Amino acid sequence: MKEKELDSAKPDFGMNEGGTLGRAIAAGRWSLLGLGLQKIIGLGTFFILARLLAPQDYGVITIVLMLVGVLDTLSVPGFANALIQKKGEIKEYLDVFWTFNLLRACLIFILIFLLAPLIGSFFHIIDSTALAILRFSGLITLLQALTNLGSLFFFKELDFKKIFIRDIGGQVAFAAVAIGWALFSPSVLALFLGYLAQNASSTLVQYWLSGHRPKFSFYFSKLHDLAAYGAWAMGQNIVSQANSILETAIVGRFLGPSDLGLYSRANSIASLPSSALFSVIYKVGFPAYSRVQDSRERIATGFLRSFDVALLAMIPFLILILFAAGDLVQILLGEKWLGMVGAMKILVVALTLEGFSNITYPLLEGIGRPDIRFKLSSLQLITALPLLFWLSRYGISWAALAMLLTSAPIFLISAGWTFYYLRPGFARVSAPIVSVLGASAFAVLLAFPFYSGLRAAGVVYFLLFLALLVLIYFVVLLFLGRFFKDGPYQTLKIIFSLHNGR
Image 1 (cartoon, rainbow, N blue to C red):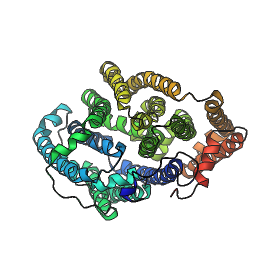
Image 2: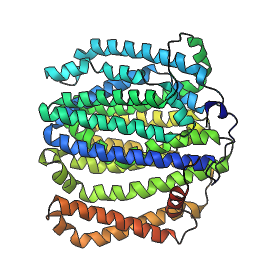
Image 3: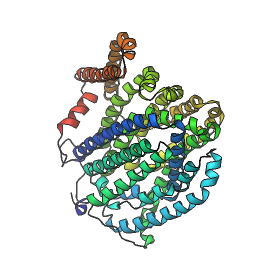
Image 4: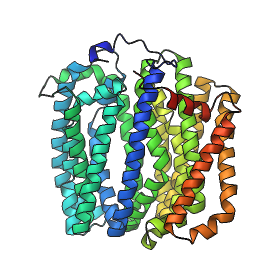
């Protein structure tokens, strides 16, 4: 679909390939494929780098990314989300927004360069290489600001094949540069150069894929049209970033870079399915919900399909980490990473609850209610601050407990609002829950007698055993799904039966 056709396209969350659901599912397939490959490449890269680098190196890069993220979030007014949600033509805004981004990134680079020594002192960073990386971390923001904003049409048109190419290119660039440098000189510099390569690759690929070519435009008054929606989006971005920064800052301050590295990696592993699914559901769901924002019935259809996918992925992963985290860390990462096992088990519960809250957020923004998401995130921030201050000083497992105590009430509130708004029937909600829990319980009971022996048999047999359990889980899930009118089985049939969606 060409840009000028966006206004005339009739939103349709029907089951036909050209409708919004068909296009969203096609986009979701590309996004799931992309996220799956990125996670595989990312995990493989981490398993290699974990043997070459120390937890402290990951603690330093976590601080670098936090610093870049906070300044970037505090200075961007949410215009990108406003342009995706906006009905009608958006091309006239792209050049002035691109110019605004570039000027903003230059200021951020200067600010980081000047503040780096103070930030390094706050987090007890004394290594000269780490301090130099901290000083030049604004390069990441500059590379991101150079991105081609014509890529916003990829989202508006649900053309996620191009997003797939962009993201995989970036992930491969990170892996190649980070591993290559770590083999030559194992230090935090390998991670920093990897992130620079990732952002540079993604920026170059976007220029290749998009026909739009940005140019300088200083008519910033045009951006006033986006201010109302953008203000809520900016507020949400600030609060969301603040929650992440809070964890990094408090854990890093009380426990130091080494424990921060363990905590950040435990968080990354525990959030594997929830972060991947939220990325897919948000990227696809936000523009899709925006297209059908006047039809609650169509919105409910899309949301319940998202719920099915989230449930079938997150619940078995939760069970896996709770039962086998120690063995997975020992086998895949080595003994120097065992200190993160306790925190990982607590975090996987917290992040599973948070994951279910997150799938409501594209719905809220798509129907023009970013204020609700902002209020929920603000409540999470207010709750997390005292808990992290109180508990983090006792160790990373206590910091993880603080996040669990924060995530639980947000989950209850967001679930209550969503089901009040959509009013799905009891049978529609219970079908995926019964199917997933039944398939998970069967896989656990089958694995229990053989687990100890295969754990001691070596890494290859252990991983093959886990892969077999995943296969058994899906087979049982599909079998149970045949007894329900709706649920994960039917959602998977839709995902794999629709074709290109165009």
